[in-house]
Length: 206
Image (cartoon, rainbow, N blue to C red; front, side, top):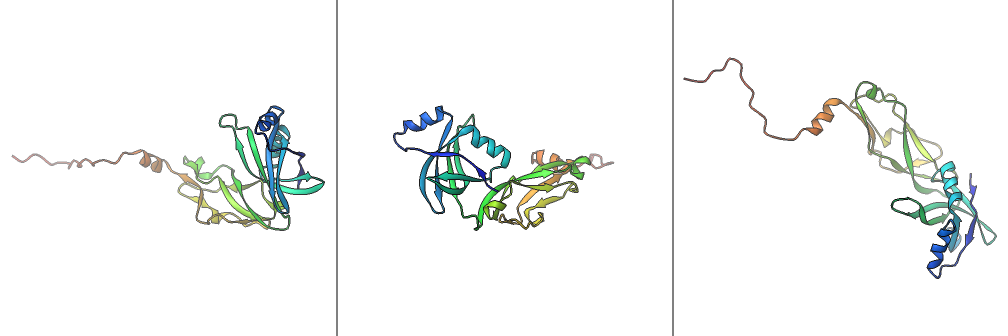
């Protein structure tokens, strides 16, 4: 289901207009893709961030361009290094009947049995690529780790199949694992020359 995002077309010159927009609480951006020519736009900063918080990064944004309804995905953005505020956004116009590929977040749920037994959880993959029609794109993918024991791991291939989307990421990619205490200490050891073991009862030759 698409959410409505109000946008306004903007001039692209002079460059100082971008700074003016940001001072007004707006983000300069562009829309391109399916049945849309490259169109420079501006969106309300707070409104876009609110919709992303409430609906997720793979939300379909419905916007009005010159009286034409366009369905889009947030395709890319630029942001400030420290504040992480958006300084420019790119929206990709999409055909709602055709599949598209996007990255989606992996969320681990549950407390692993191996952690309860003294192991440590290590998440090694945080996003995966999925393919679906725009209205079926998941906000995130939950992975239940409740039964994961020390020494066990979960790979992309272990994830349950879903009717709404297809996972594109390599099935052998590891998502998470439970490490035991011995594995952790072994990683901290510095390789060196092993000392000769002392033989009990051995005496120096006279």
